[in-house]
Length: 137
Length: 398
Ligand SMILES: [Zn+2]
Image 1: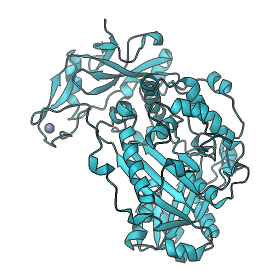
Image 2: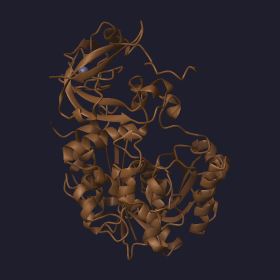
Image 3: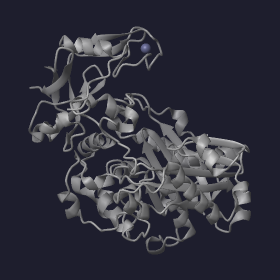
C-alpha cells in the first residue's frame, strides 16, 4: 500500500497541536481568544475578531446541532473504499463554531437537520484520535 | 444574528464607471476538438498554448494588432510574466485575476487611465494534466483549503462543499431533488443548440434522477466538466471601443462583496447561502447601471455545480428568497423559458473555463451571433458568481 493509499492524517502544526492533543485525551476543544473571548475553529495564528495573538484551546461541551450532511459514493483515498457510501456531517457546536466530522449513523433517514448531536472519540492509533458525533436523545 | 454585510455596502455607490469600457473582441479554443483529443490520450497543448490561441482569436475578432494592447491580465492558471513573454506584449499596466475579477480590473484600469485596450487571457490544461479537485493531490494540497483541512474525516473535493450547501439549502427552503434537476436538464437544452458545447445530448428529469450520486445529494449531472481550453477578451475604453467596432458590448456596472469569516468551516455558505453578499453585490451593480433583474434578457451564473443557480436566483433578486424551486419549475430557465440562463450550457455542459466562457457568451448573445440558441433582441446580460464567498455581479449591455 502506498503512502497515499491509506487515510489522510491531520497536518499537525503549532497552531492546531492543542486541538489534537486534547482529542487524544477525549476532550473536544475550540480556540478561544484570551483577549476578547471569541471562540472559533479551525485555529488561526491571531484572533479573527480582535487580531490578538494570545489564544488557548478550551474545552467545549461536545453538544451541538446537525447542520448538514453528505454521503460519499466515491473514495478519494483507498482507506475509505471499504466504507462506501460513508457519511460526513457539519455540526454547529453549542458554543458557536462549526465542525466537519463523521456521524455514527448508518441510516440517512435518521439524519434530520436540526437534530441534537454529541461528540464521541474514535481512537485511530496511539497518536491520533478523531472526534466524531452521534445522534443525541 | 446581525447581517455580516455592513450598511455602507448597500449604499448607492458613485456611478461613474457605467459604460466606461466595452468588450471589442472575444476568442476561445476549440474545446470540442481538444476534448476528443484528450480522451484519446493526447495532450493537445499546455495552459499557455490554449491561452495564446484564444488571444489570437480575440485579436482577430477585434480586428486589431497586438501592438494596440496596452494592458494585460493573465488568468490564475498561467504565470503573468511568462504569459506576457509568450504573447510578446509589453503593457503599461498588468495584473493576474480570475474571470470576473479580470473584467472588473480591466474596467478599473481603463477608468483610472492606466490602460486603454486590455487583453484578458486564460488557458487551462486541467484535463490533460489531470488536475485534481479532491483527494491527496487536490490543488497542490494547500492545507487551508477546507476540503484538505477536513480530509481526516474523509471530507474532500469541491463537490463536497456544494453537496453540504445543497443539503442544508434543501432543508431551509424546502427545495427538492427534482427542482435541482431542472438546472442540468435546462442547461443541456441550451447546449444541445450550441455547436461549441462538449455535452450536447439532451437529458430528461428522469435521466437526472436515475443518475448516480458522487457526493450525495449531488448527482453526476450536477457537476461541471473538466476539460482543456482557453478564452480571451479584449476590453477597450468606451470612446475608443466605439471607433474600433460598430457592436461594442459595454460593461454597465460591477458589484462585489466577499464573506470570508469562518470560510474553512463553511459558515458563510451554510448560514445564509451567501445571500447577504449576493444582495450587496447586486445592489451595487444595479445602482451603477440603473438596471435591475427585470431589465435582464439573459442571466449567466458561475456553475461549477448546479446548486449555484438557485442561490443566484434568490441572491440577485430574480425571485423571492425561498422561491427558487418554484421559479425553476414554473418560469423555467431553458430554451423557451422566461429567464434564459446559462445559454451556452455553462460549466455543466458547454465547457469548464472557470467563468471565462460565460463572459464571451454574454458578449455574443448581445451581438446577436448565437445561432439556434440566440435570445432574440437581447439587450442586457447579467453575470453572477459566488466562488469561495467572493460574490460578484457584472452587467453587460449593448
Ligand atoms: Zn480576540
